[in-house]
Image (cartoon, rainbow, N blue to C red; front, top):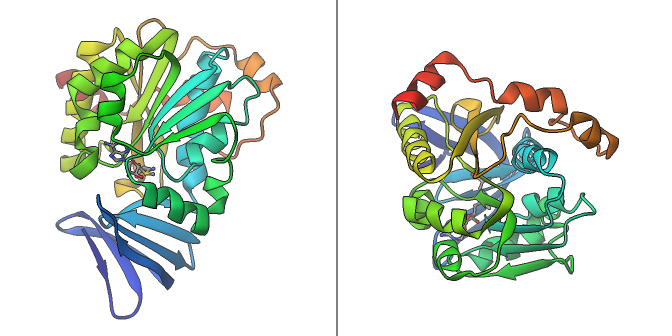
Length: 286
Ligand code: SAM
C-alpha cells in the first residue's frame, strides 16, 4: 500500500505499522494499465523511481544492486550461458546487465504489461537502454502461460517479477517452477525473487517459495543483498539448478572479463550465500 502526504512524501507501507518514505520532487506519471496501477516519481534522494500498485519496483539510485545481483552470480557460475529467458523485467535492467557479456546469443523477455516497458523507455533510459538490441525478443504476455507452452531450452531463467500478489502471484507457484525446470538446458540456472526474511509477511513468502523450489530442483540455494528501498533493506534471490552449485565458479575467469561493477564482486559472491541464523532456521523449517 502507498500513501502520498500533502507535503510531497511518498510512503510505502512495509507492514501495517511500518512505512518507508521518500520526499518527491514531482509525480511524473499517475496511470493504470490493464494489469496494475503505475506511478513514476522524481525524488531528491533516489532520483526517478516507479511503483506498481504502490510498491517500489526500482529507483535510479539503488537499482544497480538488484540488477547486478540478479545477473552476475549465475553468469560467473556458468560462463557458457548463451540463451536467456527473463520473466517480468519490464524496466530493462536485467537485459542491460546481461548484454555486457559478449557470449549472450539471445534473450526472450516476457513481460505481461507493455505499458511498464513503454514508460520505462521514456522515463528510465538508464535501465531500458538495451531493450532495442537485436538479440532481445520482447513478448508481451503472461510468463506463466509462456513457460507452460515453450519448447525452447534456456541456459538461464531470470524471474524478475513483482511480489506474489496480483499478476505476479503465479510466478511463485510450483507448477511454474516445474515448467522452468523443464526448459533449463544442462548446466542451466534459474534465479528468482525470494522476498525478504525480515518482516513476517515477506518471510512467509520466502519460506513458501523455498519449499516449492526445493521440491523441484536438486540444487536450491538462497543468497542475500542489501536493497535500501525494499522492505527492511534485506532482500533475497533464489539460485536453483539441476546440476550447478553456486560456489563452484572460477573467480579468476570472471575477473579477467574486466567488467566494471559497483556492487557485485567475486568475494561478495562467496559471502552472499552465507545467511544469518534466523534466516537459515526459517529456510530449514520451510
Ligand atoms: N525489481 C522489481 C522488484 O522486485 O520489485 C521487479 C521488476 S518489475 C519490472 C517486475 C515486472 O514483472 C513488472 O513489470 C510486472 O508487470 C511483471 N510481471 C508480473 N507478473 C507477471 C507475469 N505473470 N508475467 C510476466 N510479467 C509479469
